[in-house]
Image (cartoon, rainbow, N blue to C red; front, side, top):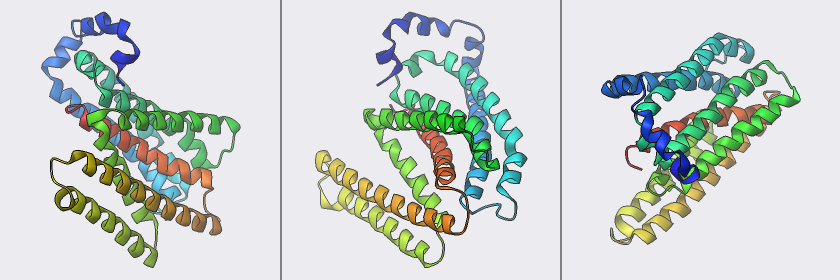
Length: 272
């Protein structure tokens, strides 16, 4: 699914965008603007990640969650503005390519979901504000993230980008779990990765892509369940320690993974 599939009538408008100032000037210096956009996303995602990790009990644990959020809230605001402006400008300069890209649609939806979660949900969660509208915004942000994952999962060549998201989730849980549980969890992840390598390179012939894809799909499902199971175990431990609620922990995980999804989409624009 691409923007051209959803809005075919916009094709003439999209084709004309590159002729509109400042699109043609930006296209001549596209690499510079792209770096600016990547840095903006990193600033926004990184600032949000600091708060999310603190909610999960790692990182800046010597400071209260509310204080951690207030320390990076300006970076989040600046990141939202810089990401939006730079994304709009480089999008104009490369409109026709992005119009037909499933990877771009996945990235675009994930960016909107990430901005919603960063701007409207993370703050109230961090300061303990339990207004009902926060959950409505959370539902919107999580729904957009889910839609982005769906676009990526059905996007053909872009689908392997979901392994970036799964890998990021597994690393997050590795950081969050503690003690001997971490060794058990890490060993399970390595076992799944080893099974993927064996099935891809040894068990099936290189031309038997159907079998390789099915094996990787099944193993990815097992990997996801393994990660989710340990995340839930750690979540219950945090609740027993009178830590953040299950809702806050869910937002913390999603807040990081939505930016990984956006980055994965951007990474695969050149290929799909």
